[in-house]
Length: 411
Ligand SMILES: NC(=O)C1=CN([C@@H]2O[C@H](COP(=O)(O)OP(=O)(O)OC[C@H]3O[C@@H](n4cnc5c(N)ncnc54)[C@H](O)[C@@H]3O)[C@@H](O)[C@H]2O)C=CC1
Ligand SMILES: O=C([O-])CC(=O)C(=O)O
Image (spheres, helix red, strand yellow):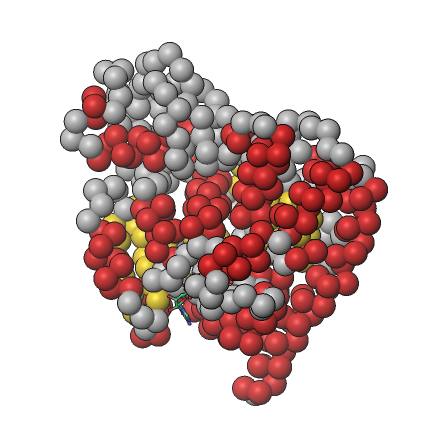
């Protein structure tokens, strides 16, 4: 989330010039840019430090911008400053499971633009070869490979650093996320079993809903396989943060890039709790505004489901949010010591075994929890936190019970 002040390319910016990252998988970029104005990074949705480019051309951040520059045969068209020499040589591998879907395709496109990735593996049960062929024509560094069907799943996961899982069905109007449980629980279980067998060291990003239950399912599967590392299993709740930042900026007339709102709890209805008292920059909200904003953020997924009227749920904003979380993970893996994101993870911050909060990411996964976010909450937030606990607990227990039941059935 926004506390991650630098984009991953900025994390890598430390390697621009003379500073080197020990153990970094990223080779030197050798980028020099001389110009008057600071570029801002949208990847962390926060003003970036350091590098200066000529304008605020920001998409996923400077890395993306630089990649596009590098892929353009006449970069001087894009950058008036003449002093640049960008040679991305990245070596992280990322796999997307469910890559041919509504989220998977735009997510793959956004990830393909990262200069940190050498290989992008796209897996789906159908229609993925065309997506891979299409994407592979973009002249950015990552090599794209498509994998179809269970027989190719293992190969799609070999030596992968980050696995993103948006496999599963989306909601239609009138459904809750929990209504997806019966189909998606099994999809997540089988996907994570394959991850356990083929890349147990990878960061695992679970997007498939209901996240409040699918993350506990993934944890149990990994435990049963003897490879569970709670520091590397993440429920992707970045979209809640992205929405909170957008809605607060709109409401208060702030610059989008400056706004940072931590969102805690879980990822469904009232379990989504934006901490408006912790918003940066510090803003005063009336009680009415707090109520309105909180409910809008909690119902934003449903807002999209209803607007799509049977055509699915959020895909583009989700792809954007997931790409940001991938980018943050890669920056952390690359040794950037200043990466913070909200995520739904195994946690001891409350009495619940899984809970979304801000975490600090590092090479080995979660390095720390930002406990202070939960200290000194407003009365409204305290009440909302207590109110969400029973629902979140029930969703967690449902996920755990699913894996137990499956184990009994297959014994
Ligand atoms: N965490 C979050 O904030 C959000 C989560 N979601 C969730 O993401 C999931 C995917 O949404 P969409 O991409 O819109 O759905 P979609 O139906 O467009 O795509 C899902 C893809 O998963 C594939 N798939 C199904 N079973 C699979 C399996 N066993 N292995 C690999 N791939 C498989 C399908 O072939 C399809 O291509 C849904 O469960 C949705 O609720 C959606 C938005 C936000
Ligand atoms: O609402 C849905 O079903 C998809 C989702 O999780 C979101 O958009 O936050």
